[in-house]
Each structure stands twice: as C-alpha cells, then as structure tokens.
Length: 473
Ligand SMILES: *[C@@H]1O[C@H](CO)[C@@H](O)[C@H](O)[C@H]1NC(C)=O
Ligand SMILES: *[C@@H]1O[C@H](CO)[C@@H](O)[C@H](O)[C@H]1NC(C)=O
Image (tube, rainbow, N blue to C red):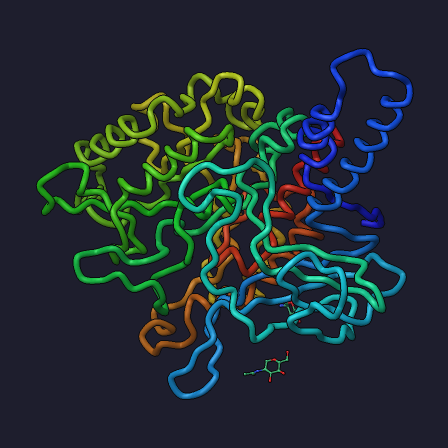
C-alpha cells in the first residue's frame, strides 16, 4: 500500500463547511467587493473547520490507539486497567519517524504530550501506563443518538521527528455506513469488510447473583451492545439460552457463554432497536448457538422455544428485519447491496443456526459460516484463518456472508488450571489480527469477529477496506 492518505471527517468540506459558509452569503445581490470578501471568509472558515475536524493524518504509514485488554499489575492490590496502547506501522514508508506520543487532544506540539516514546522499528506498539478511564461516548452518543460522523474520545496518538506528522485518535464510528454510503452502498453485503464481536452479549454479568464486569473465562467483551454499535461494530455473534423458570416468556431468553448465563436478551434487542431507529446503519445479528433449553436430549429442536424467540425478535425488531426470501439473492451469491436494504429501510439481517427452523420461517437468513479454528494456539489460529479466509466464500454457500472467528479458544484444562484468561488470549492475537486484515486478509475477509475489540483496529480498517473495494467496482 504505497498510497498516502489523509482522512478528513466527511463533514468538513461538505455539510458543515457549506452551512457555515451560507450564513455569510449576503442575500442581496452583492457588490463585487463583498463577494470577494465573503468568499475569502468562507475559504478561511472552511479551512479552519476542516482542520478542526481532521481526526487522522498521515503522509505515509499509520498510527492508531488501542486499549490494552489485560490488567497490568502495578503492585499488591494495584492494577492498571484499560491502559492506552500506541501502535504504528510505517512499513510502506521510505523511513520512519523517531518518536511517538500520547496526547489528550489533537497533537500539535511535543510539549503537550502525556508520554513520549522512541520508535525503533518500522512496525510496533507501546503499552503506556495511562488508563483510558471511563469516558462517555462523545458527540451525544453516550445514551442516545448524537452527531453523525466519526468522533474522538480523549486519547490521541502522534508520531514524527521535530514536528508531528502523523496522528490519529481513538474514535467512535456510529454512522460509518451512512458516512461512506455514496461509495459503499453499491457493495453487496458479502463484499463488505465488517467488524464483528464474538460472543457479543458476554460483556458483563447481569444475573440475580452477579454484576461482575471482569472475569477470566466467560466475558469476551467489555462494552455494551449499544457502545459496540457506536464504536462501529455491525455484526453480533449471539449465544442464546432458554430458562423456563421465569414466569414471563420474554424473560426466559438469555445470552450465555456456553452453559453460563450472562445477561437477559430483551434489553439487548432494545439497544439494537434504538440504534436502528436513530441511524441508517445496517446490522447483522447471528443466533449462532443455543447452548441451553432449545433442544430435546435426542437433538430435535423444541419448536415452542424457538417460536418464542422468533416472536420476541418480531415484536421488538419486526419493522427493521429484512426478510430473507425477499432480499437473499440465492446460494453462492453475495446477497443484496447495502443500497437495496437502505432504500427499503430493512436494515436488520437475522441469521439463524438451525436449518430446520430456517426452512420453516422465510424471514430467517441461513446459517452464517463461522471460520473457527478451535485452538488455544495463536500460531494455529492465524494459520487456520489464512487458509480459511483464502478459500472463502465457498462457491455454493447458502449464506452471502462468513465470519472469521479471530480469537483463540481455551481448552478445558486451561480453564481448570486457570491458565491465562480470555483477556490475555485476546492480547496475544489482536495486534496480529489487525496486521493480517491490513495485509493477507485484505482482499477476501468479510466479517472479522474478535474479543475485546478496542484492542485491535478492525473497525477502522474494515471501513477503509470497504471503501477501497467499492472504488474498484
Ligand atoms: C509511567 O510512565 C512514565 C513514562 O511515560 C514513567 O516516567 C513513570 O515512572 C511510569 N509510572 C509508573 C507508575 O510506572
Ligand atoms: C504476532 O505479531 C508479533 C509482532 O509482529 C510477532 O512477533 C508474533 O510472532 C506474531 N504471532 C504469531 C502467532 O504469528
């Protein structure tokens, strides 16, 4: 990738620039002098607003901020959580800058850096000892719809020599599909690159006995479904279980990690609904495993339990659901374009792992293949995914999409002997996943689902790759 690129918030030159400009346009026929003056003012304003909205800049290469998933031990009983990591990749450049720093606003001078580190390799990362903390989601997105476009959280990363030449921020991408719609809407859903989360609902216990938010082997995420959507995640891998001891049907469906109950399903469906109501984004929901309560001991689906879930989905999300028989383009194809889904305002694709149930319900999308290595070894995981992504999609696949499950799976012994944790496992692969997606997987990956997604750059990279693919059409 020899091209250098400067990404400017899409608003800068268009919507905002124009609206600021407009208020300076005189409504009477202007004299030549005022026209020249107001044009100059507009130009200056546009430049100022464009500069204010630049959230990422690079002459060559890239820097990005991530969040370290494991806790860092500082001493007895003192842990540093969510340390900010600074990452760089200057492998496409003739030479690389000599330092990188963490900032709490757009980097303009090294004097303002919170921490500065030397760069000694073309590609690498630093784990700082500064925590992300618990900042609200910016631009109004904390608990409802906010401003369109990407927006920065507080951490910024900058690199350069005497001057800072490359910078970026940790950002949310709540409306990326709409922001880049004029390009990517012509892509079919199977041609997009999309960031997903493995076991998306396992982000904090919410049961009668626990509200724990960090553990070793159950929780795979640490952001709510709402926050995941706001950060730019568009695919959720859900593991749904059924417990008949709740009186109300709607309370019986839970999100699990295997046999462990994590949180009730209904509030998550409402978060997805709120997001779909407020935006023009398309969301992919995948009921991929039913670990408890959906099957007879002989393996036959329990019809009433499946029906109850489908009813709940319909009640909560019905108007947004894209009926499979209406929008699917058939086996071996890449599915509808984003444009088709958006034009018809059907922006939720619900895929279901059980073929029998899919055959009986025309709105369900067929089983979405998971490329799952089932290994606890990072090397094996990457080897498997290199091959599996390289040979996907299968020529006659029934689903237009496929998901690379980019996390290792602990063995029973790992869990019994408390060897490692899901956070450490994620830490051992997330940077490699970012690198693979930027290189080997770049042309063929569709959905890439990870654990603790703030520790990789899959959201931003996927957006960039989708735009790239649309440019080639
Ligand atoms: C944190 O890192 C800074 C350098 O960035 C160092 O000066 C400081 O001693 C570190 N603090 C701790 C508690 O490790
Ligand atoms: C992951 O990336 C690091 C740094 O580039 C590399 O040293 C390591 O070998 C990679 N891991 C695997 C399993 O390929």
